Image (tube, rainbow, N blue to C red; front, side):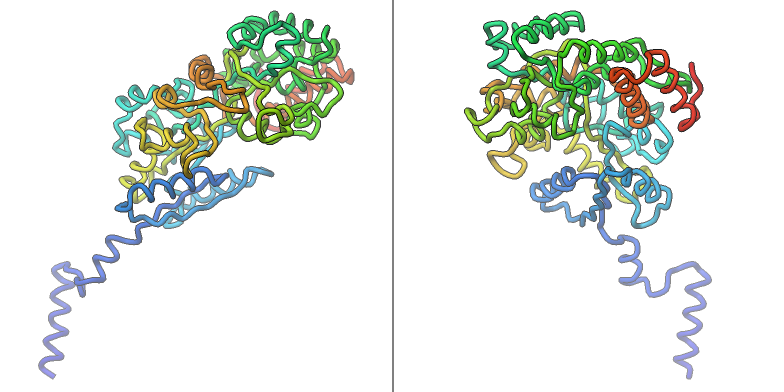
Length: 448
């Protein structure tokens, strides 16, 4: 009985002086917690990168819990928003956002959840300079608190054209010459379109090919001072699209349709000269729709890239950290390795040289100009051309200051209305009027 009373008294004393009960074991486990990083993405690209990081750094003993939700049908953003707002053990530590909606998470409605890279302990200023990161990616990933997101790809755009058609029309397929035929500016582009038509070719597949260049090259975005704004360059797309249609300069396809893919392998009656796009369009879309897998098959190997009439970018994925994450030190290492490490053991070197999963993978343009300058970007699909020679400066021509978190929605309204006009279904004035009304009705944005 005495021993029992003594034990009880001891417990009371421990509680009174604030010491934890049974300090050995239980408290250490609770304090340390499970070593888990929650990663949210809409593709398996970044999850595979973390697999590579763990392979290279066996001491990094964190479990990676991955949530992948495709952006189809708009499923990714609502789920991510709910997870960030809900917080807790299952909240994202690292999350990805693509160009169509990244500003929502870096500068818009959900930006308050993003940690600045400096808060993570990353030597941002030094590493940005060392890696030679294109400014447009920095602008998109920054807000008044600092840099909160960066990408690993470079998505500056080029003009991707057919070598055989260039030779048939101008007698050469040299990128240094062809860039002077199609630009700079849209007047030169339409001179080239007329020359191509005279030989029986279209200059592009559809007006969507031109839209990404027009959108990306405008001085201002769709929203200025909280109001809808139609930049003159974007309004000019109405006339560019109409001119392409009325003169038969394209096949009037819509991007991401079977007819558009068919133009990549000459499966439509009229051959087309080229497409506007970044390296990912070549690697992940055109190559697979070229009708071949090596030079001489289909159009594979009959392509080249040159500087476009206007500078632009299209696409990309930004990597962001949750400011409320309990594992900031760990995610800082991963994020720095993905976005700012310009060494030969950083993610971007593997990505640029197609060696992330071993030799022989797909080469791609990356955010770091430093990495691309020390990498080999030659592709059989481009007839052996080193695409980095064109895409490194392409990233410098692009701007990220004309983007807004509502771009994805507004672009759909705009392009649908322009197609109504070019199809002869409404006047130019009615096209603009209906577009403005759609934005007002659905996004409640007044007109500037």
